Image 1 (tube, rainbow, N blue to C red):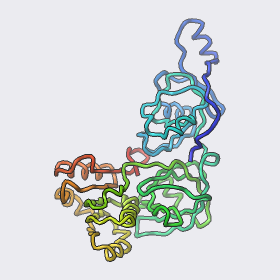
Image 2 (cartoon, one colour):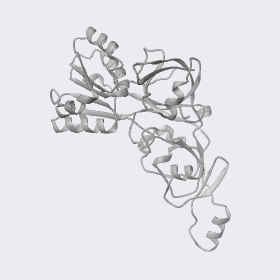
Image 3 (cartoon, helix red, strand yellow):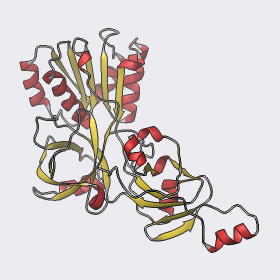
Image 4 (cartoon, rainbow, N blue to C red):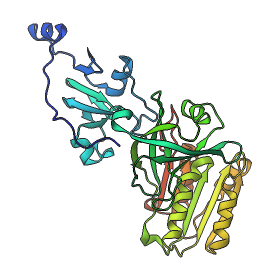
Length: 344
């Protein structure tokens, strides 16, 4: 995780030839960036992530919406204009961490990029196995315990500097490993890397972050509606077990939409046999539109948890709202792709 302590930030005075000439002629100097042993100027109001990337500084990113937290940078001197400061914890901001995709450059900055070897948590592969045709189950054992809650996601780093956020499918304080479900149906930098992993291989863990998905004990008597598409089942598998562990007494209805088979069907059926209040529904990709067109809450007391691609999450949330479920009872996280906004 990014450290919450560090050197005190300071202001910097632009000192390059361009800045000196600009001051001499009364022309406002362009902001100067310093990072990775380099210094260069950028137009005022530049997006910080773009400014770093265009200069050849490697900063991973997935969503450009502040959701994945892959583009963390630390301000050593100077301060950018942060468009969404609430996306980071106060102690992270105090230590100088910022999300580059959400910052604008309106003054000189000296920066450090997130270094997983320095700032991340080492972890080793416990196991890697296929769950159906298109899903890899990756289990990791971190070098020290990680405190997390059901519904959160974690940034996974490869040795080559590829970083991707994945939802935690493991159950906090019960599963001895951290579990992730990786969609392997399409090529991808992290997915291609993951296919070659072996037990004992080293990875690094980056930012632990929570989206909208969570479970609250005061929901224990209310109907729960869990809607998942593909590996959107991963965080709901964790949240379902969390709710049952906390003694959820209201009805729970879980619907899973999938192209190539329902990869947790057997363990889910085992849970349903042990809990009379759990109802399971398996929806093929061909049946998806029909299911969405008839989607209704059982009452206005329902709490809906939704996870999948952005279009799936948006349609489910809209259908439920139009059917009378208050917006404050619909919680959705959408997957992140390399060029697609959302939360995994």
